[in-house]
Image (cartoon, rainbow, N blue to C red; front, side):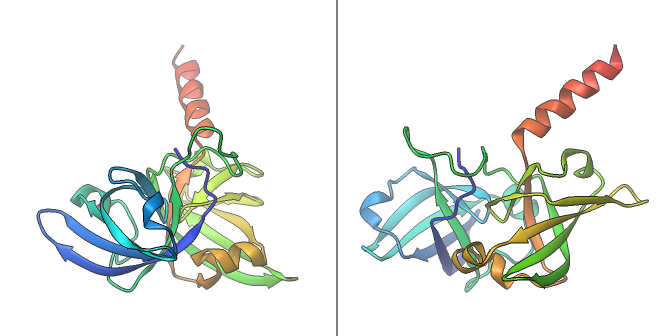
Length: 207
């Protein structure tokens, strides 16, 4: 379980296609605090550490990605040189600073607008029709592993929707979201509460 509060930006140092895809990710972390078998959210995807090393402030860790994981996430995001938002899993007693995040990507969205607003940036993302019912104004959503609040939602005639986010300077600086541009695709995870409410609504309609 995660909260969508990114603790570091990592870089894919190597990507090797074996039976699955093996990645080596470098990050300004302490390898002594990275356990073998631990879960780390990598741009919103929960992955398991299989090897680790390095030194404090210059750690590396290896993860394996199945074909299913690669197919459900942003194409090309697992190439060598790509940067990833990193968040270790919650420990008992940790502050819940964002919202409950599982690290399971529901869909891929597309950035359709980036505009400066004061010191912040307004980013609009288009979500597919199957995602639209789960996105609500002032609700939470995870974008590339970052917990964000939806400021506005505009439904489209094709069933999809465009939702608006506000990226403050701090978030832009400590995550990869500051580099988003129109046409970029992002990993989306809906709020777990929205998932359950949609299920309850569906069951009620059947009665």
